[in-house]
Image (cartoon, rainbow, N blue to C red; front, side, top):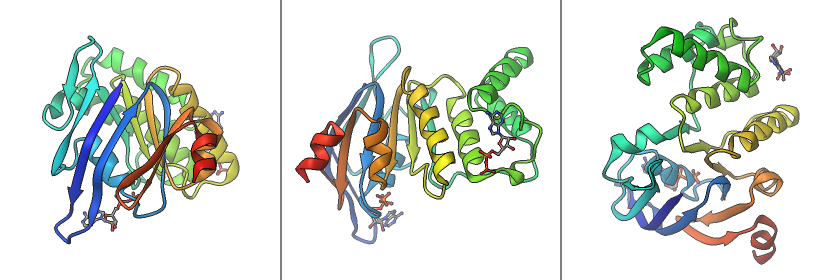
Length: 228
Ligand code: ADP
Ligand code: ADP
């Protein structure tokens, strides 16, 4: 689904955030595990076309069977991509329904009836239907993250990137959130970046472990963690 080859990035301060990263990311849930500072966010931002790499290549399989050059053809990638950043902020005074509709307009869903259908369907999918009229400032951390997923799913992406989504969630909210991700992963590629081992062992069939800008190993979670 996504092929990453020899990706490198050094920041202006001299930090080698990505050091010759190569990965093959399949459809389904893919876990990217690593401690703080490993380079996970740098990789996620690069894949989400929000940051330039210094060298390397990334290709995404398009819906039509062709390939997209992720580092160059940014508009094409953005049409296929959903992204939940680590620091996803919401407008506290706006209702979930209104903000999601606003994001839908930005995504180009201009036909009102179709937009309502998409927004309503997503609110149901992430289990926020009953809470749709509530202001986002009243939401729990887990509800905000589920809202973030609804936002990321606008536009039917083939690739969904979620960066450290479970940090700060209590166990029940975390489970609910991870189950939602697993459902989504049945249809699209989901990259889950996390520093929490259980996030990947619980539901990612394949994973990579990153540290200091490098991929240490990839494989099935139990094999990979046993090899550490
Ligand atoms: P992770 O998401 O795994 O915590 P990051 O990609 O955020 O890792 O960070 C990798 C390294 O790059 C860290 O040493 C971090 O301090 C550094 N870094 C991240 N973003 C920047 C930036 N914009 N400018 C300079 N250094 C950065
Ligand atoms: P927390 O305990 O952190 O506040 P909860 O998981 O209890 O979070 O959920 C808080 C709110 O989320 C509930 O009051 C409800 O409005 C909404 N909610 C939770 N589960 C559902 C659901 N299955 N469908 C619709 N809304 C839900």
